[in-house]
Picture 1 (cartoon, rainbow, N blue to C red):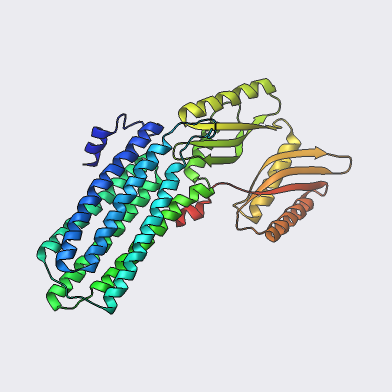
Picture 2 (tube, rainbow, N blue to C red):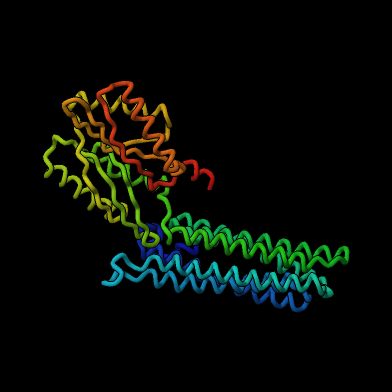
Length: 398
């Protein structure tokens, strides 16, 4: 079903890196969401009124909020498609995040309203009317929501959309809430025990949790989130594959909306190669990155001394010292400046973000001391910094 809809309504569906194609995917998801949620709202509202069930009506208005969310998503996707202009040189892609953030607040507000209604039902319960037709409609609703969850998750993964993946999680939450509503109906039908208000309370909490999760997922790129390790490796490997590039570091990616990114990176080049040659290589990489990755890439060149045996030995010694202290540490921009009585080892040290200022100072002292023990002529000049990449252990915990 998903593939059929994609092939029918998304032109050039296989070109997922194209902004316009990505927008078509978003519009398809929005239209499907609007249609499905409106149908579910009308059916549940009717059954809720007939059966005097607050939990069914709560579930109905949850679907209505989902339909409104899809409308806002539709408008947001269309506005985000607008090209760059003189006032917004990086385009309007972040409007998609803003639209999703508005949706999150709508979902939270609906959940809070349902919370108040459910508390009222607990304090002043009404007689439920068990109706097998109502249960059948709710079972159908669960099936529709599960399909929507799979539908949005597939599209979200295909175009790398956090908003769609969040919508998929919201649909799963709705399916769980509806299952709880079915439980209250069945319990009343079998045992004449009214747990409708309690179940409605659970539904409201699930709705608010879904809203908070959507807000978190959409707020992160607006504030500025760490670089995904996959993207970090993709860009680093892309630059590093060119002849004349020794290594890379200090990659920074700025997100101006899905499919709209700007990045800067430091590329290490041999110091004995003419600067015009290295500059031509860097220019070619920047052009290729725009064409192949869809990223506006700015590259800073760092010359590296490749032919000095003493520099190589001192660098090897520094690697051994740093690795013995913490395997997560790394360094770059290593330079050796010789004086009359001492040798300055100048480099930038990359530490995990968990390192406090005091820990960084203590680490710097340890490195300087251990290198001094190995070669008393050496004096370290260290600049401490943290990576902009999402650390691997944090990625595993997500």
